[in-house]
Image (cartoon, rainbow, N blue to C red; front, side, top):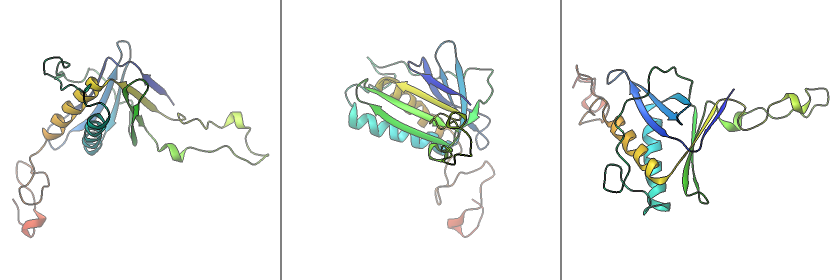
Length: 190
């Protein structure tokens, strides 16, 4: 059970391993001495990038400079740092805006924080110090990003998500090189 806090973070990126249609998605945080790599679902990456853009558009539009533009951060196109082992798989993601610091905070957990055990009220049960009821009782990762870093993360994430298999023009499902059975075409192969 670990809690990793990256504030500040040197690099926080989404990346993939494997060919289109069989990719594994990862989030990787680095601060110069530590590297944490957690597995996520493609949909989690896509939704996280969308929500980051929404938060930045609402709360920090002037500070969220586009990556690769004059005055903006350089665009990060480097692959994930290797070699790496998956530290754990993300079950729950959360996103928050720290108004005081003007930073976006992303938390990744390998559990649902609401499902953590509570202290046993039974006097015959374990003593309270024996039950870990902290919100970080399992694996958790917290990353704080300034608006420019957050915008760069979102942009890279969307690029990675779109780099997969092209969508079917009829149903929107992913097309394999050999096609797919399209539900909108009554099961005919497209």
